[in-house]
Amino acid sequence: MRARDHGLAAGPYPTGEHNAITDVTGVRVGHTTLRREPAIHTGVTAVVPDRLPLSAGVYAGNGYGKLVGTTQVAELGVIETPILLTATMSTFRVADALISWMLARDPGLPSVNPVVGECNDGWLSDMPARPITAEHVFAALDGARPGPVEEGCVGAGTGTVALGFKAGIGTASRTLDLAGAGRVTVGALVQANFGGTLRTGARTHEAEAASELELLGLETPPDDGSCMIVVATDARLDGRQLTRLAKRGVYALGRVGASYSHGSGDYGLAFSTAASGEHVADRRLSPLFEATLDAVEESVLNSLLAAVTTRGRDGHTAAAWRPA
Image (tube, rainbow, N blue to C red):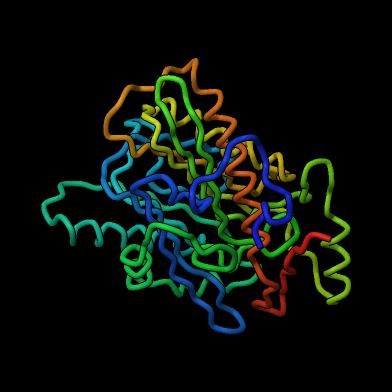
């Protein structure tokens, strides 16, 4: 069950067909999941636009992390590759494999700027083992599909923990009529791995996390970590405007109780798939900002609700959240 099945969906705007980032035409998602009990729970998630380059913007809410390629995105307002998510210590292996994948498709590329984000899944997974190979990266990229997106303990979310519970990958979308642009879609995908106290509306859920862990006789997961947020839209925006959209993705984490701790890497990356049409004026962006906040909030809740209780390295366990 997803957030809206529990009555937890936010905002006035309807979702796209699949309530996923893939509702933005031309966006596909693929996962490679690695599980080797008890100590390996990790993977790769690929967000793959059908065409490149695309206008893009990036925002670091708290920069304790790695988002490879962001200086060029910030400077030029463009992404040249798919966006890959993985575990902290596998970041650069994944980036290298992404370059190889791009070169296989265009051997004449004079340069390419891989975009790879990460979260620390070391509570449940043996990160120093660095089990992710180029073949795992290629499988996520080549397996990327439109339509429904698998959530929870898959891909880059296999070993992540957020807000005291097992988390993972989550996604959601919104559609709306935007003045000057007609009907547009915005979709979000998150790799949730951050600290704080889970909130839904005015209710907090710290007691549920504590009671589940006490019942299982388990330690509490660390109250820090990161969140990688990818936002896609078919509204025609430039890099500066997409940076503003990326900021709203990071702001949305506050709605679900993020602590934005010292050790958290909270990054938003937004891109537009629009190939034509009128650029949206700044004064008309507010509804799109609101829809982005709603989609990211719901994505985080979906990541939690799709996850399952997971026992990992050194006996560490993260309990799943099930609303009372």
